[in-house]
Structures are given as structure tokens and as C-alpha cells.
Image (cartoon, rainbow, N blue to C red):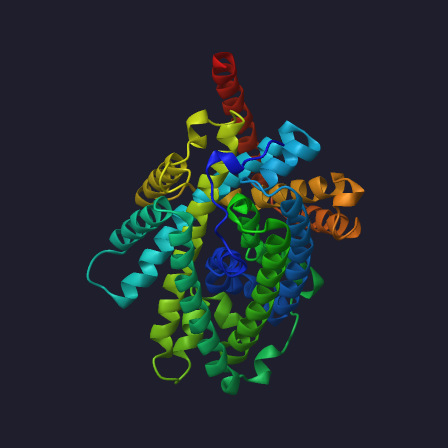
Length: 421
């Protein structure tokens, strides 16, 4: 691959910035919503499913780290697929990333509005959602460093609120709430692992932004490993407290289980602090979505998989400003009209496909480029395939349908833009 330093992006993200981007992408809807769904399918044993999901996510994370250290370009798995496998795999990863992250961003923006409205019921939740999308799009436009500082503030508030919940809840844990531990057996635990895996996948945002990370060969592997370990420890601590305080059944019956936990505690201002944490968590995910999607558009524009104007970089702020603006507009539209259920439903398939390609690319690396040997990507790929088996057929078919639409779009773009060159 050609050197991309002259294309205008600046390597300004430090280890601290990269970790905060990863945590901002991970600590969102997963911890505040998905834990309740997982509790419904496996009871208290969803903690085991959480650990299984964390281990599989760690294999995938190490594969991503190994690839990003050698190929520190915007686009992440999109680039690795192109370089190490073939263009069809690369495009599949990039297209699925865009589809799933744009759809998820609309959902997250709506989630932020509903939480923030609880704190300040001065206008409608959708107004707060729209304002958040505009604010974060503007923050991204004025440079990666400013976006990184804002993200660090957001993640710090979220972490402090969750730690306050953990320390408040530990004295109130009731051991009786952990019995029966696995009422739905091994199948329930396996299903909860598949559900919870998606709560860990934000660490890949670090690889997607690799072109803006300082000393990528050292920084990216460290940042990804720190991010995934921190997320596992935090998720386990919160899950143990949540089950111990209100029980798995109550978690399963609530759309906001951590709010229910907070309401059951008598610690000063605990409910308000958790609501603030949920709001900032949604903001953090939304900020990382705009960062990641716009950089993916940049990478795909370079190869004519999207119109080449996406590769344009702002002369002053050194960011892919066209990608940022179009990302913001699409998220805004999805937020206003409501995200398409068809696309959101297929996000599980798209994420597993994305990480399967990551592991195949890691397996394709020359021996001298492998930091962790062959076992890690093999285990990561097997984990993704095992979880994909548990998906409903309609989810798989809808994901394949979206992929076919993508290839049709790619064919048209190449037909137009390749002729112009």
C-alpha cells in the first residue's frame, strides 16, 4: 500500500485518546440495555455468557491489533480484506460496517434523547437527539484532537457514574438472587454469549482510526488490549451487582435494568448519576460512530467503492469533512424518521461477518507480521462462526440481502468513476 501520510490526516491520537475512543464505543447500549436481554435468556448465568463473549471478543481484538499495527490506515478491516484476501472481502467488511453503524447511530441518538429528557424535561426527547447529532458532527468537523478531548470527557463521566453504581450496590448484593444460577442450561448461556458479544465490539473503532494514531505499531495493540480488558472487568462488576440487587428476572423485564438497580439503592443521587452516565454513554457511542463511519467513507472513496469526493480532506482541520457532514445528515434523518428495523435486525449478522473477515485477514498475514501466532485468529474465527449458527434464518438472509445491494452499488460506482480516470 502507498504511504498515506501526504493525504492530510494527522497522527494526533495518543494511547489515552485511543483507549477512550474504544471505551466510548463499547460502553453504551450494551451495558445499559443488552444485559437485561441476556438475563432473560440465561438467568444469573449470563455472567458466564458475558465472560465467554469477552474471551471471543479478546481473540478478535488481538487479530485487529495485529493487523492495525502493520497496516495503520483508515478503514480497518476494509483495508485488511483488500490487502490480504481480495477486494470482495474488503468491500464486504466496509459496506457492512457502514450499514450497521449508521443504523446503530440512529438508535443510539434516539436513546440519548430519551435518557437526557429524564434529566431536563424542558423539550421533547427527539429535540435532544437532533441537537446531539448536530453537536457531535460539528465537534468531528473541527479536528480529531477536539473530538478526542470531548470523547475523553464523555467517557470519564460514564465510567465514574458506573463505578459509583458498583460501589453503591456491593453492600446490597443478595446471594439468594443467584439461585437457580442457570435455569435455562448451557443453551441459555450460549445464547446470552451471542447477545453480549455485540456489547464488546466497539474496540475496532481504534483500528478504523489507525491513520490518526501516533506511533501506531506500539499504541494500537496496547490501546485495544487495555480497552477490551477494562470493558470485561467493568461489565462483570456491574452484572454481579445488578443481579445481586434486583435479580435476573427483574433485569429481564426492564428496558433500562441499570436504572432499576439505581432506583433500588439508597445512595445519595444514585438514580440521577446513573441517568447522567447513560446519557454520556450514548453520546460517547454516537461520537465514535461519526468518527468511524466518516473514516470508512474516506477509505472506500479512495478505492472508488464510494464516490471519490469522500477522500477529500479539509485543508485546515485535516479531517474527511465531506464524510463527516454526510454521516451527520444520514444519522439525523434516521433519528428523525426512526431507524429501519430491517437494517437494525441484520446488524448481528453484519458484525459477525466483519470480524470473521478480520480473523481471515490475520490468518493471511505473512509469518513475520504475526504478533500473536495463528491460534488467536483461528479461535476468533471459530467463535464468530459458532455464534453465527445461533442467529435466526431471517437475520442471516436480511444481512445477505444488504450485502448484495452493496455489491450492486459498488458495480455502478466503479463503472462511472473508473471510466473517468
